[in-house]
Length: 112
Image (spheres, rainbow, N blue to C red):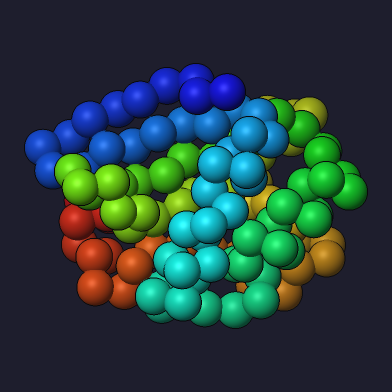
């Protein structure tokens, strides 16, 4: 389910609040991981989708950033836990490295 849609001058942020995020982003997720500064197995679509399918410890909240041409520039793979604390999918108990997934060449655009 596409929950919300924010538009900045030259990027678009989209918020996903259910598992459709994984289906929608499957093709482009790992391509972005390959272009990111934090390219580890823990950023991959496989790790994030499998972890989420196994645990689902709260409310999914995946935020993406795309340019005006629809190219994926960033993914924030998050969830809100039962205490309403925002956490990365994977959680610190089982994942060695968690981070935003951001195209190395587009960091300034995404973070701005």
